[in-house]
Length: 131
Image 1: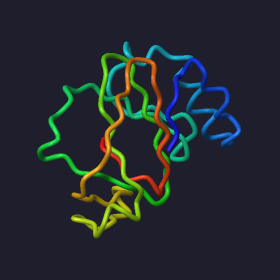
Image 2 (image 1 turned 90 degrees about the vertical axis):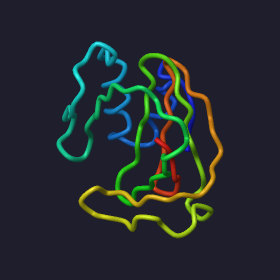
Image 3 (image 1 turned 30 degrees about the vertical axis):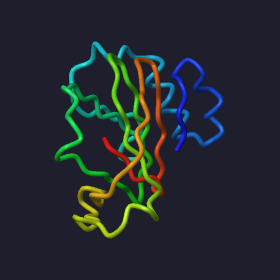
Image 4 (image 1 turned 120 degrees about the vertical axis):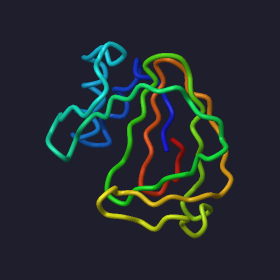
């Protein structure tokens, strides 16, 4: 997992062309003003899911992990706590991996990192995370 700011995201372009495209999309668009929904950047390979919601309490939340995709989380407004646990500590999935949703869900405890407006978190398949 990588935690940083969108203002300094160029250092993460070395992760590859898809990461660069995702980060450039965030830099070039006022995400806070965009309508919620999916925005294709490079087909199914790189896309943005713009979401607007009131953050939840930890009760009822679960960790998720992917096998194919990495997530680039960006806080456009406000703040949010990101739950994190290495996949090997996440335990047995409460909901097994489903290729359609590209996720497995876990109910183990995790650590929390405060993300503020302008922050990014890049989570990889080995990172169980919430949200």
